[in-house]
Image 1 (spheres, rainbow, N blue to C red):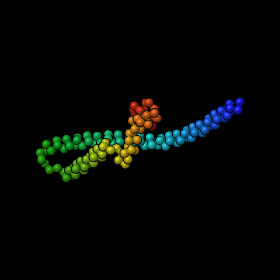
Image 2 (cartoon, rainbow, N blue to C red):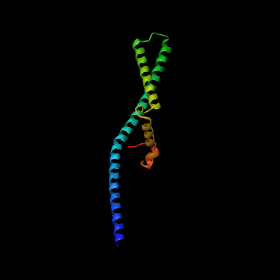
Image 3 (cartoon, rainbow, N blue to C red):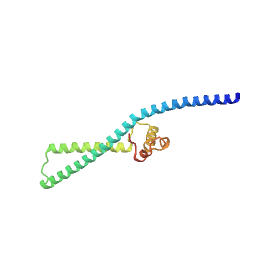
Image 4 (tube, rainbow, N blue to C red):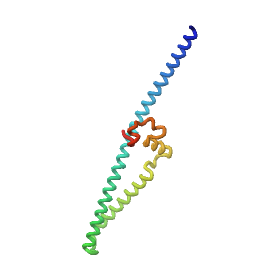
Length: 149
């Protein structure tokens, strides 16, 4: 009988230790999830901003192309008549701004996160793709369509 009570006591102690470890793990998990939500919100915001800026860049590029076409049409209709200095200045400024935007977008395409270390970039890539250690953490639906928050 003494052997049975010792086994039961060890089982109860092991269960108690397991319960304490589970509680700590659960608290750590909840804390991590609370910290992850603001990150995901920021990530989603920056992704939307990048998409919005790319769309604005495309619209501005189309507008610039239309202005160039109109300019060439005016020049062809008027011959080589002198062009208003203000118009030339505005056109030059618009072209400079478009070049800056194009350069910025090319830099973003080459390295969307220039301030991150290589291992941080790899971690972010694994998370957004739902691969590596993150595969089991992401819901099945978001692993196919990207990050959603």
